Length: 317
Length: 164
Image 1 (tube, rainbow over the protein chains, first blue to last red):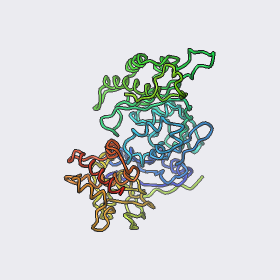
Image 2 (cartoon, rainbow over the protein chains, first blue to last red):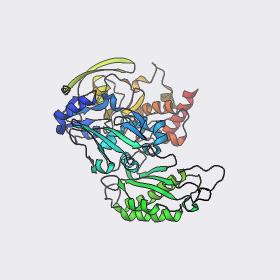
Image 3 (cartoon, rainbow over the protein chains, first blue to last red):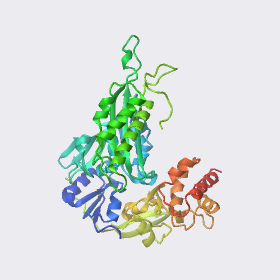
Image 4 (spheres, helix red, strand yellow):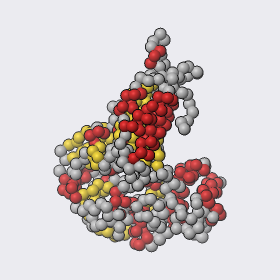
């Protein structure tokens, strides 16, 4: 037997889950998709006395649009979200990022909430949640708490979820129809943990109104740039976002931002990559992600109108 | 407040494997891969890394390829499983197995059951994959003999067989 002994309970409702957590909280572990916890159990790095299996709590498995948000139940499989037309339409950044999460066999079991609650510093979904400004719904016996990404992610593999609480839902604000986004990463092999990943969301000012301010056309607006793999939690580089705000799209500008990113980040060295290499890769990925996001940003131009300073079509390199 | 469910150390679970209903009593910490091999004698499912990296233990759970080393046997309760033993129809190999034979898609064969099950779901989703899609589709399975080229050929041959 690989895992150390534990007792097992499979609640079917959130109430039963909370009752179990109330009884065993600190000694218990919640099992969602198991794609991170099961290896830890098999290697006996985690030795909970009670395992609470969430997989029968069907009330946690849903995706729905409500109040300008896409609300995703914590137990939603990553593969279901990856294939969801609702997610593709309103949260294309998540669709983009999910392709980088492990392999299809992992995503068939792995859950959206499980990955976020595990808070691996090199995981993709925490960076997506940070880039989109998601709200985390955490339930306990006293009621529920709503947390922002900067409150939810506390440190390396650590979130603000208390031992007797469970993450039930993640609310992602719908991305604007004219937003452009991209998730890119570098890993040793496809499906491995990312050495560095970058999520970019950009908006662009629309075409000038007749007689309006020509100056705002084709400029960056509301940029989000978040990295994974370069710190204990997702790292948002606000200086880079601010440097792009209101600027016209130019290759040279992206090169400057790449340098700025590399200078601002303070990653650690490990067996996979040195800190210096990670900084360099982060700069390169910032450029690639912003370029890809800008290419996808609307409003779509009909029949040869000006695209402002933004390039048209093509694939980023 | 609802009554607290009592956690248990052992449990009897029922599920179907390769179309057959089975019932097993297992320690709750036993992985599904171990239960398939030790309790049900289905030793075609191989165990390599036992932490979700190598893909040798891949089976189908309700038609989806999953790592059976990352599931507990108790979690299979009520589900429909398929292992490599369920592919062939008597003496007739499954088209994916035939394709592996024809393309010499295996050498030592240790990784093969996992590849076959992964490719089952992959080709059901994408009957006409490109070579790049095949490479990505099998990326979650490790093979230390073939260098993958003959496996890619086997997937192409299998795709053609399944389409016709």
